[in-house]
Length: 141
Image (cartoon, rainbow, N blue to C red; front, side, top):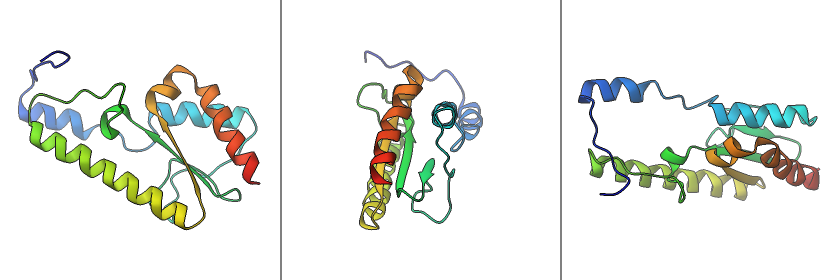
């Protein structure tokens, strides 16, 4: 069981901790938004009129950006499955990935370019991630 650590919290404590995890305005999202803003780009945040409520949207260029958390979306480099409630977490990750795929496909069918960036990419170099987004946005305007 390398890489796995036992859950030392009670189910009630674990539930309390997990309920406080943000779905929007996470640290990586904010870092990427700051980098984009400092490079002169303006954008919408979590628009409710688009499937999946992308984290960052460039409406005119029709570019939607999702910043995926390594744990919640199953990063191939960093995801580590919890050892408690394995069945639950396996289903949760599968459902998250299916939902991501459904939103991506729907947006692409509507003519949107979808960019997915991993949390660890933003954490290590937000400016590089912003430059990647800018190249795509400017190429579509």
